[in-house]
Image (cartoon, rainbow, N blue to C red; front, top):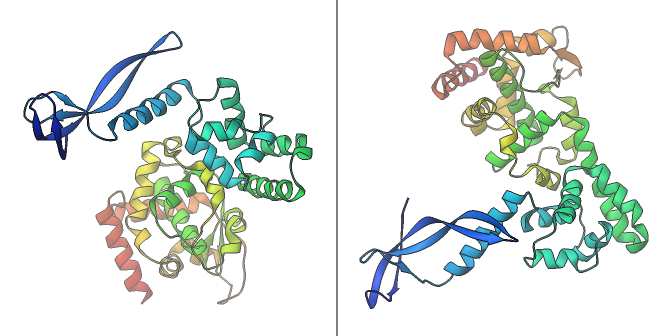
Length: 336
């Protein structure tokens, strides 16, 4: 596949010409092992020969570096920066916490490739707050009290994420990746719609958590606890940097349903979504006998949610955006 680029000097044509950017495979031997890397090359639009353009060599170095790390399962510079961000720790202190020399992490950030052994240590800290807490305790004397307390508090906070299932975390991370702003109220309703529509289409829930019929609509209590400090504000949670780039942990079926919900329900505010759920049978049945504003914690069974959306699917065809938009329109008409 080609991409039109700028003009530059072609040494074969001996003049300035337009060039195209293309991908080309090369074989490089690293530590006695052959690797095939895809790099970007500039091709003269007139003579078809490769051209040397500014910045291309640096781009190739970066491409090879990223592909080599991916092939060998080594952490990237972005991984290390993400680790520093979520644990609120500097590069030198992180080196000491992980049991490395003080300049090791700074060198990795400058492009030095870590060994497999050291890479595994960094990755373990990324995926396990318990492991990070263990390393913090082991190397506490190497940090200032302030640095230790800040990183330990971050580790405790990240550990609280795992009060919900891995699948729920992946779904939430995917929602954050796709939408620019999500409030806690909006997130709760989107999760409810995702659960209902997925279970109706595939006959099983997408995540294991149970929903409760609270005053403001269906709520997953464990998720509420994760984000309660954001109140009515958009969620900006650095802890979810842990899950950036992990969309492949979801199946194509799961991603398709989440996209379906976000492309339809996702255009509305949390209060509008709340109005829709208040007109749906599962929430109304669970709230029966409770007056407006009276708290309740009644279970919204996954089976009841699935059966409701199976009926809605039969009527509207909610496996398509068009069907869902029609359903939303009718529900909002009913709520007005």
